[in-house]
Image 1 (cartoon, rainbow, N blue to C red):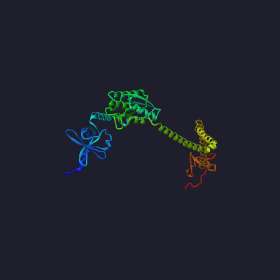
Image 2: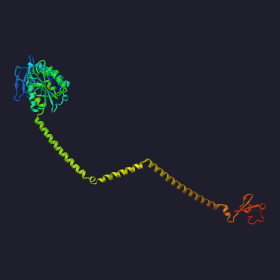
Image 3: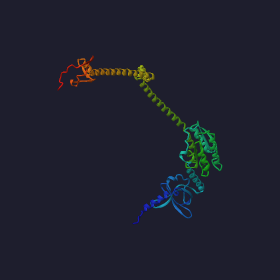
Image 4: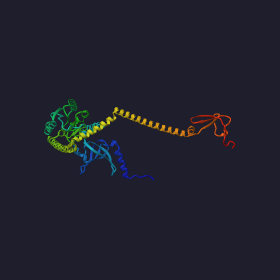
Length: 425
C-alpha cells in the first residue's frame, strides 16, 4: 500500500528545505518593481522582475521604517533578504529586509560583502569591545574641523560636563583621501595617549558621502585601537561598517557627546546620593561598633580585670608543671627513684625468700631428725652388728663370733655368753 502525503505535509517539508538552505537565507537581488501594493498595516507586497523572470516579494512593516525613498512600480532596486515558502498557498517568495535604489547598488554590494567578511573574522563580536570610561578626563574627536559635527560635540560636552577636555584630531570625512586621514588620526591618538576615549564620525549624508567609514582600513584601525572608540556617523537610520566595529555606536555626533560624558547635574546628584548613603552607612557602623563596645565592657572580665591575670597565672602554673614533668633531669630523677624503689623491693623480696627457705630447711631437718636412727638411740635403743651387718633377729647371730653394739655415744664389742628367745621357732 503506497504511503500518501498531505498537501500541508508537502508544503511544510518544502518550507523546511528552503529554511535549511544557507544560500537562501542571505541573498542580494537586483530587480525592477511591479505590482506594488502597500497594506494598511504597513507591509509592502510587490513583484521583483527582470527581462526574463519574476518572483513575489514582501517587506514587513518592521523593516520599512529604514527606507530612504518611496517605492513605486518601475523602480530599479537592490534588495537583501531571504527566500522561504508561504506554507498556506505553497508559493515561494522573497522576504525583503533592506531595499535601496539601484543607483547605489554597487556600493551597497561592496558594503555587504565587507560586512560579512569582517563579521566572519570576529571584528563585530561583543567580547572584543572595550568599555567606555564612566567619566573621561579628555575626549578626542576625529572629524572635520569645519563641519557642524565638531561644533555639536563641543557644545554638548561643554554644557554637560565643562571640566572635560576636548582634543580635536582634524580629518577629512568625505572624499578619496578621507579614509587615510581618519586612519592616520586614530593612530596618532593611540601614540599620543592624551585622551581616554575617541569619537569618530560626521553628520549625515548619502551613502557615497559616508563611504570612508565603510572602508576596510578604517574598520581595522578602529578594531586595533587601544583607546575605546565611539562611532557617530550620519543620522539615526545610517549604519556603516565603523558602527559595527566600534566599541559603542551613537546615532549622531551629538548623541555621541551625550554618551561620552554624564551631565554635571546627574554627577552632582550621584555624589549627593553617595554622600548620603556613606553617611548612613557610617552612622549604622558607629551604632554597631558602639553597641559592640558596650557589650564588651559589660563583661565580668572588664569589671574584675584581676581574674584575667589569675586565670593566666593558673594556666602558666599548669604549663610550668607540665614542662617540669617533661624536663629530662626531672625524668632522670624519677627513673633513678623508681630504680631505687625497685632495688629496695627486690631486697625485701629476696630476704623474705631466704627466710622462707631457712624455715623450710629447719622444718626439713626436724622431719629428718624424727626418722634418724641416731635420734632414737638417744632414748636407749641400740644397733646390733656382726661382721659389719645389722642383725635384726637372734636367729641371724652366730654365737661363736663377737657382736658390735652401737649406741648413740659409742660402740661395744661383746661376746655371747648365752642366748635366749625363740631360737627354734
